[in-house]
Image (tube, rainbow, N blue to C red):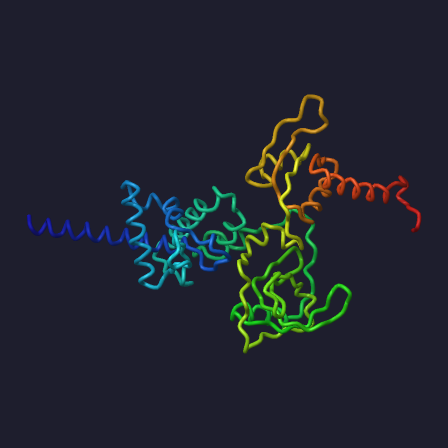
Length: 356
């Protein structure tokens, strides 16, 4: 009896050990390797919401303690780290690129995908989900031969870049160095500058660099890489960090569209395909809409608080007669003026127009 009891206990402890090892591996794979902002790193509450099934039917307090023990173990082993030491709540990222995979590889990879779905789909962050599936999921799930992401607008050909410029920009960002450049502005004038890189952005066909200029502490400027005639990382000068700069926030504010993106209360009337699209894909999380009254030439009235940017104006104009801007009045006026100019170009129904 004693021997049987010992064997049973050994098997039980072995099963517990295996379960925890699997859980640690799963937890490690869930964390991002590359971090664009603090918010992109999950905290304990977010991790528990994704991995709750891995911690059994214990009460919430016990599950939180078990998760924290796992996180502490991974930190101790050098596999993850807290990106905000001393912060509340602590947020984590993965340190290693070579996550060990035990067979069967496919099941581990599929579990990683399910964890990413649990993290990003409820937040409607499909762009981040697909990016991590393509770059971080280990195993034969989806690669670039079975997953492709295409824009829903006409895609222009990328600009022509100087290869040495792109290499120098990436080197400076990776090593945290200032960058000495010669920059050609819109008037085709060239001037030297020492800039302090903060982040790269690919906007449409053109890559841009967020950077501080010379000794300025603000603003963070946007530099088009194809306008850099020369670029060289300054090996003797660390790059200055811009106070409070966050890439995600800069994009959300509309700074990537050459403006600060002042928030406006947008009200639209829409019809046709656009009514279907906006009902399924809101302009922003707080979007509100209602049916238009009987007899209206439109289907829906849509309201949303959005940044006022060039990107928004281009989208409004691109919708054609499927959309009417109701408010704000100044934006309605801008759209009306632009539409009037477009109509004037096509005023001659023969397709010919008088020379200016």
